[in-house]
Image (cartoon, rainbow, N blue to C red; front, top):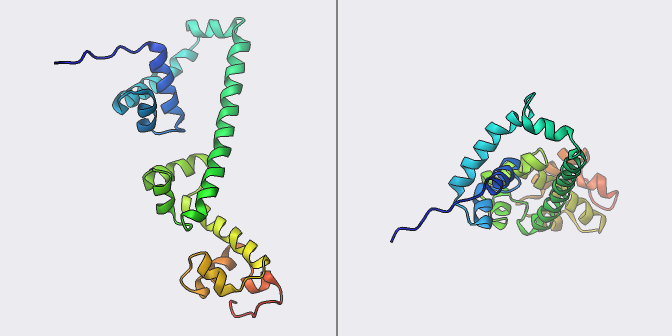
Length: 195
């Protein structure tokens, strides 16, 4: 028995296409949430990308509508969307920060925990943080190292806790990002063997 193709409204297609164009979620995620095949999501995204500029051409009927009393409503919607995106970025950063230690500061493991491919995670990081996941994870790892050094742990213990194989590698990484060795950072408590 053949199933009838679904008929989607123009407003629904525009909403899905715009969500895909914004890029907060992948086409597969959007499709799964809205029960639409990802290929359709991709097609609608392309249509929105191609036709959106037409709305702002001089003389287009939407431009006249924009000039009318609906301007305040449209401005309010744009502000709400910007606030949502800002909040969403904050939530993403907090979520990634919570998973960084669980992932042992490894980008591939973080991608697995986020249920994304490594490439999807890279795209998300480039879009939201303008850097690679591993750069960000290295920074988080060094922030954790600073806190552990302040707590009085020895360098070898910190090396093990943060997943470094050798103390010398930890010391080099720490010095690269902090412009001082872990011993210098911690003060005179530690011997200066990491210089």
